[in-house]
Amino acid sequence: MNQFTAFEEKTNEFLNKYQIPGCIVAIANGENIVYEQTFGYQNVEEKRLIDRNTVYGIASLTKSFTCVAIMQLYERGKINIHEPITNYLPSFSIKQKDKLPQITVHHFMTHSSGLPPLPSLDYAMVRKRNEASMIDHKEEQPEGYVPVDSYEELIDYIKSLDIELLDNPGNLFSYSNDAYGLLGAVIENVSGESYEDYLEKYVFTPCGLQHTHFTIAEYGDYHNISTCYERLEQEEQDIIYPVQDWWDAPAMRATGFLKSTASDMLKYSLLFLNDGTINGTKILSPESVKQMTTPHIEMDPENNYGYGFGLVKNYFGETLIQHGGGLQSVAAKFGILKDQNLSVIVLSNLTGFPAARVMELALNAYFNRHIDAHHLDVPSVPVPISWMEKYAGFYQSDEGMDVKLTKEDNELYFHYKGEPYPIKFIREHVFLVEIDEGYEPGEVIVDENGDAVAVSLYHRIIKKVT
Image 1 (cartoon, rainbow, N blue to C red):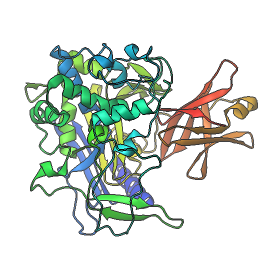
Image 2 (cartoon, one colour):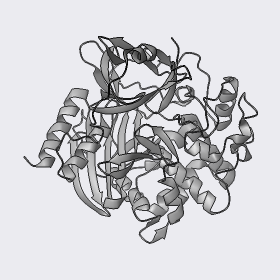
Image 3 (cartoon, rainbow, N blue to C red):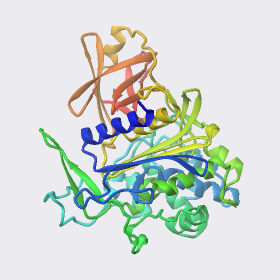
Image 4 (cartoon, helix red, strand yellow):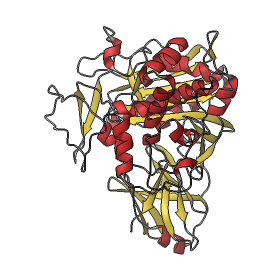
C-alpha cells in the first residue's frame, strides 16, 4: 500500500472518530508543495470544498508571529529582550515585587516568567451571540468573570489575583497565554503602532501572506473562509454544529487569534528555512532566526522551547521545529524540518482533532517510515509502588486544568473526561500518557522528601491539591 494512501485512510478514520467537519494537510519542500490533501468540507451543510487558500484559525501558531515582531524591534534597537518587562510595560506588577525586576521580555517569550496558568483567556474571549446556530445554546460566562478587553485590564486582572510565581524567573517552563498577550502590548508601546497594524505592515505584507489577518472584516469580499464549528458533548454522541462568528480576544490576540491558510503558512515557513529572507526580502536577520529556533528552556522532558516555537529534541534523529494551536473552532499543527528544507501544516475547524498526530503520520508517509511510527515509542522503566502512591492525587491549575492520577493494580493512571489512561514511565519521574492518538510527555515534580507537589503536563505546571 502506498504510504500516503495509508495516511489518508487513517486521517479519514480520525475525522469520523472525532466528528471533524474537514481539514487540509500540506507538505512543502522549500517553495514547492510536494503533497496536499483535503478531507471533508470547509462547510458541511453547503458541501463547500477546501483548498490551500481556505482560511482557518491557527490559534497559538500566532505566537511565532509575535516573536518575529519582537525580534525585528530588537534588531532595530527599539527593545532589549534581556531587560525587565517593566521597561516596556511600566504598569505590569505582581505580588512579589522583589521578583519583578528579574522578569525580562525573554522570559515572556519562553514561558519562563514564573507566571502560573491563569483563567484570563476565558475572560478575554468574546463574540457576538449566534442566533442562527443549529442549537439554542447560551454561552455561559465563566465563574468569577471579570472583563478583560484591553491590555490594561489584563494587567489589572493579573494584579488582582495576588499570585505567587511558580519559581524564580528563568527556572521553569509553564505555558502562559497571559505573557504572550502582553507581548502584544510591548510591541504597541515600543513601535507606536497597534499590534495588529505592526504585524500587517512588517510581517504579513513583506512575507507575501495574502490571506493572513486577525479579523474576518479584514477579508472584505474574500469568501474562501471555513465555517466555525463547536461541540456539544452528549452521552451517546456529541453534537457538532456551525456558529456564525469567530471567537476573538482583543487583549490576547498576540497569543492566538490569527487566521491564515495552508498556502500562507507554508510560505511563512520560508522565513525560517531561508534564514530570515522570503523572495529576496529580508524579514529577520539569520541570527534572529537562530535565536527563535534555539532551545532556551526545557518545556517538558522530550521538548525544548525557543521563541514562539517548540523544539522536539530527537525527532527520528533531527530537530523538529513545531507548534500546535487549539481553540473551540480550531485544531492546527505546524512543523519545520530545517535540515530537510521541509515544512508541514495541518488545519481544521473544530477542536478535539489530533492535528499533531496527523502531522506526524504525514511525515511518516513522506519519509516512507512505518505509518504508525512514533519518535516517543520508547521502552518503559519500572517504578517503585511507593513512588506511585506519592504521585497519586488531584492536581489543579487556576487556568481550569484538572489532572487526576490514581494507582490501580500497581499501575498509575491519568484520568481525562472520566476515562483512565495508563502511564508509562521512561525515566525517573518522567512518563508518557498515550492519548489523542499519540504520546503526551509529562513529569512529576517532587520535593526534597520525594513527595509529589506538582505535575508538568500539557506544558503547564499544575500544582497538587490533594
